[in-house]
Image (cartoon, rainbow, N blue to C red):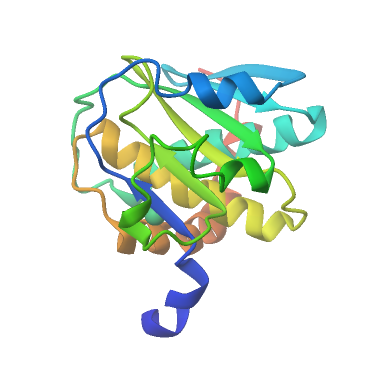
Length: 193
Ligand SMILES: [Zn+2]
């Protein structure tokens, strides 16, 4: 079953390279402008959307927020403390920019044989204390959007907990997220104590 699913997942990867230069994103940000920036606090994690759509900002931030809640359940038996306090930035960018090897030169493209990507998590290039998810802005399917974000949020979680970055678990989490999403809806209806 997993082998069947593999071709669907091959566009979603994670970078593990150790890049310390805080100017890694300068070239990218010199080319891209964001008209919508919105931040939420999810537990103690600050998550900021950078893009051009207010509607998608809300949607993407709520998938990210719900992913964090559900990742707690997904990894509940592991009870691993945070080892890196990372805030998260989600950049919603044009597919051509995302796949521009010069602008995105901080990614180690050889990790996925230099194929084009739809989304990527980068925990290492951003200035200290933050990490980033880049996602192409022309994804119109809600199903695919939640799949991409829940997948990359798993890498964020793995990185934050200093766990091994694991593609298999990130792929597993995509369907776990879908199947457990009702948990977050119910939780929202409960009064805060
Ligand atoms: Zn991945």
